[in-house]
Length: 240
Length: 175
Image 1 (cartoon, each protein chain N blue to C red):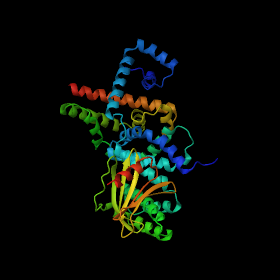
Image 2 (image 1 turned 135 degrees about the vertical axis):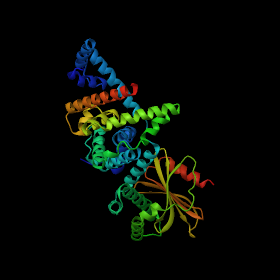
Image 3 (image 1 turned 30 degrees about the horizontal axis):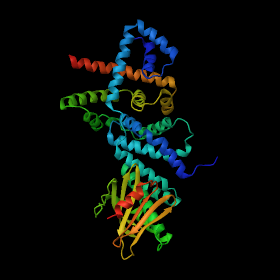
Image 4 (image 1 turned 180 degrees about the horizontal axis):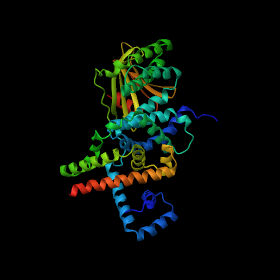
């Protein structure tokens, strides 16, 4: 037989939520009540069993990476045009989680495409926005396609996403790398006769960009939260 | 009042939210009983929290996030599926030294999980929020929109019901 009126205080005691005066009263009662002492022991054992059911640990790294990437995308998808495109993508007739992924894929595409498009001197914004819009509307295709070329393996960076897509009119390999919780997007496309040049720096609306051309391909590395990772990635890609 | 620039808001959001990822992942597993659904729930919670971060008034951030997670969970919950997936247990099993212990621990965990799932939803939700979310009584009260007294009452009933069922299950083992 348990003392019903002690049930809540005993639980509060186990949770560290019982104030000192009430704890003193309960302690006095426990000293004289074997059934409440037994109840306290059993509830304590139950809490111990529950704590082992789902151990305390960090969230999986893949989940951290996904959230970091999504927040990176959110950090720059603030313009009315991008928000509108995100809205359109999220309303595409695709069910559940896939629809949301496509929404994010669309947002990531907007970022990569806007970055490349708006910085390319030979482009004008109208053409680039049209190209971005086309690419967003084809995001279901781009997400399901497998990148044709192998992605560069960059020491110290984890490749978390890869796709082949259209970026500002270029058929591009779009890759996302992760390092220290920061996501870096790398777009690679054929140089198509454009002259080679060394690494150039640019910042566009909070996004830091490094771009270069090795005579064969153009490389665009961009991050909204670059830290040291962006320059390290560029250095490791260009040293060979 | 002047609104902080977007970059500053994002930095502040990250500073508040990212340290809670592990805790909310654990709570999400407790709520959904399914690793993939838990990850989806955590991600959705984080993104919705960022989306509405402008409405955050500077109160208890963990409770504010818990409200968002609870609302998302309730809008998507499929309670019948809660006990059908034991994938969440794989990480526990990884910690055990041999296959026999793993089988015993898995069976024990599945039975405990089943008992939790058979609690009335209001009790289960309160228990899971406390045990796996690690929220204080006050934070649970905010998250569930009930008085602190109701939290205490639900929690003690949930634990007592679970204790009785768990003890009965152990008695069955012995006989």
